[in-house]
Image 1 (tube, rainbow, N blue to C red):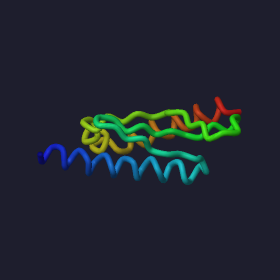
Image 2 (image 1 turned 60 degrees about the vertical axis):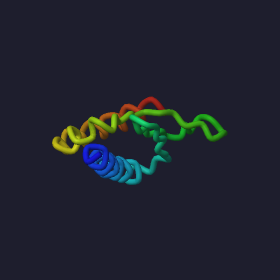
Image 3 (image 1 turned 135 degrees about the vertical axis):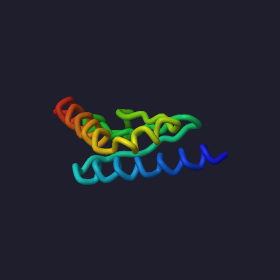
Image 4 (image 1 turned 45 degrees about the vertical axis):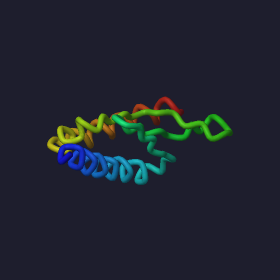
Amino acid sequence: MIEKILNNYFTRKLLEEIKWSFIVRDLDYRFKDDKYNVFVETKQKKYANEYYRPIICINKKESFRYMCDLDEFRKHIDKIIEEYRKEEE
């Protein structure tokens, strides 16, 4: 029970980090949650309708590991966002 509470807390904190990374870069995003994973999806600009593509998947049980190495996680997110931007152009 305590493990689940901690994993949810760390997952929320990671999503806040991701959220600010996307806000600073002016990207449309949304979070899609299921029992074990959280998907971060971005809006595809080349489609007129509301089409979102998942670009990041975070395992809730791994969130503590990501929080322990937060600087590395931020660099990884930045790299993913840059690859996404290049692909969109």
